[in-house]
Image 1: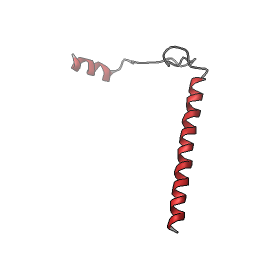
Image 2: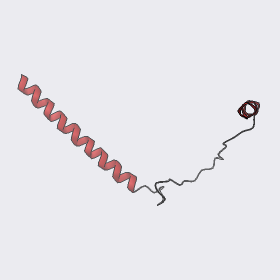
Image 3: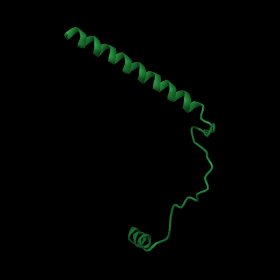
Image 4: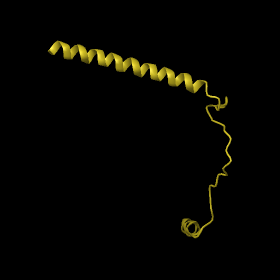
Length: 69
């Protein structure tokens, strides 16, 4: 009984390790062939219709800036 538990644990560890290695290799292969990635140090360039708003003037921001100065 003890031997079968050890064998099971060994086989399970081997399967988990092989799966992890395979998943890592697959992820690396997918990331290197990404169509959105431009050769610019890993910066992804895409198209979006949304306008990025970084700051919106509000009463709360005005109070914050008055206190910050």
